[in-house]
Amino acid sequence: MSRERNAKTLLNLFLQCLRISAFTFGGGSAIIALFQQQFVEKLKWTDSTEMLEMITMAQSIPGATSVNVAALMGHHLFGAKGMAVAALGAALPPLIVITVITAFYDWLCANAAVANALRGVRACAAALVASVSLSLLIALFKKREWFLIAVWACAAAAVLCFRVKALPLMLAGLIVSFLSALIARRGGKEG
Image (cartoon, rainbow, N blue to C red; front, top):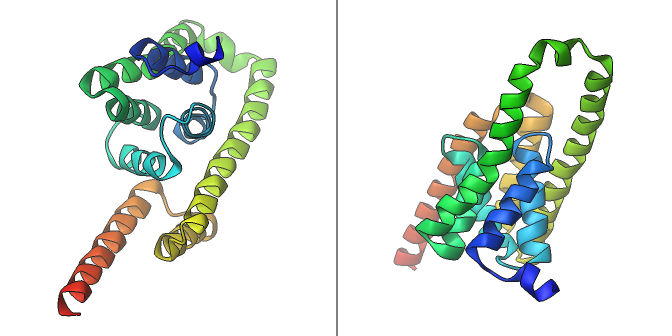
């Protein structure tokens, strides 16, 4: 039974993305933690480095990060079919939920119990985000990726101390990494 649940099939990919998306609150960052936990740690369908690359790419392109990560995971596993199946699995639950919320929006806004429940969910989502960040940092230390560790530290300081938003942060990371690769390539040609 466990082997069937871990089998790499399109149906299982769809169900994994659907389940993660249906039971995750807190936005793209929180859902990324569960993708990391499910696909890297539990199912072992990919490794931390590939997952980090997918997360980075997903955050660099337009659209919901969770759907982008799911689509990239699907493509990684099954090509174009996997991309479509995973994206559908990740997009379906929020689409259904937002449709229902829209119908009852005024009532939900006025309900104190709903507001308090969402505060608790936000706190848990923050813990999930911190967990993913630390697990990715640990993976960088294990691989002795000193440059990327420095980039991580600078990015963390920019967000925590200076409240830098995602887009400028991602652009800065892209530029710094591009320049680093260019310098490393030129250094290799001269040596």
